[in-house]
Length: 113
Length: 113
Image 1 (cartoon, chains in turn orange, red):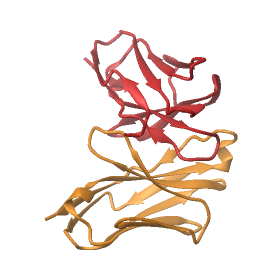
Image 2: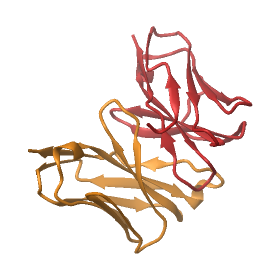
Image 3: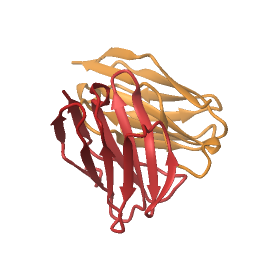
Image 4: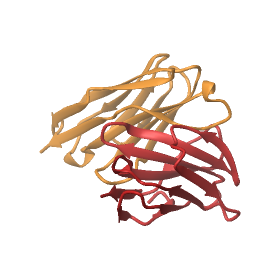
């Protein structure tokens, strides 16, 4: 069964304190791995797509990396406005001809000034 | 703003009732996905349409149904509502399927009393 696990569930950082969020996945062939940011009561906001092991993507203070079993979202020198829930999702070849996303439970990040 | 619109933003109704949630995808996107987000289950895929045709079903109850119209907007119909149906319902759209990024709408918060 395709599965996505994120850790930690919650993370508290001081402003400027860099850290990483983990997303472990078990899928029947990875079609793509996606990172989203979600603010309370809002829809997920697309951040990155990764397709193959070794791939990296960057956007401002965020950098996403991918291996054959997991992905990391590195946050460098975070600011309070980076506080949100970060969601990891996968598309699997085993899902057939559908693009459905399988989501992890998310990591809730709080950055204190 | 992702370009995906959903109405209404909030819906409060009673058990046993029927409601309709509406979604307009981004301009040019042919595929529409519906997801349910509850506190204990996280984001769960419900159903996908591509250019008017049903493409895939996920954990969608028989009491729920959906359709995509010729102008590509989609509606999710929820009937015989139960307390446990209270959740955030998100619509997402993508240009193609099965690969590619999905862009989410702001969601409809359904409360069943």
